[in-house]
Image (tube, rainbow, N blue to C red):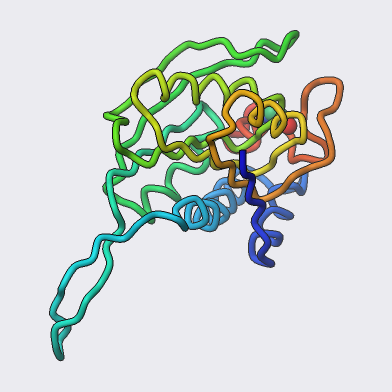
Length: 206
Ligand code: URA
């Protein structure tokens, strides 16, 4: 399973704002969206283009339009923090949702809601900002594969080595794009140094 960690000063700057405990939800949401642009651009970097002939104000030329369909599946609720980035860059992307809750004792995923558009033939971006144990991401990928997805990329903000290992064994065909690969999980299954609970930081819950 290939992992791509963004190597860009802009990504590092945005990630630092997200990691800072003093960043309040409005700036956190805005910064997550900005970082999302870089992550989504990287997740689509290997997409083929469809050659088209167009007319500029001066002459005809050959251009390239992004090959479709593209689907984004937000793993609730933290994945919502990257959804606007996808929709701004790819306004006609279809959107799905995967509702999963973490069992706080075992850290295993518990499903509560799924809704997917057609996944066959699409580049499917799974928006799962925190790749911690990998349980939720692996579960979400199982679900999209069961529903026809064959071309899946995971879009993360921070990944832990434990989650990366889990992906390597469960879904070696899935590419992971992340803004950081952190040190480890702590005993409560949070990523360290991490940025805390992404959903809480996005939405101001505790
Ligand atoms: N989910 C989060 O939001 N943060 C972590 O550190 C791990 C899982």
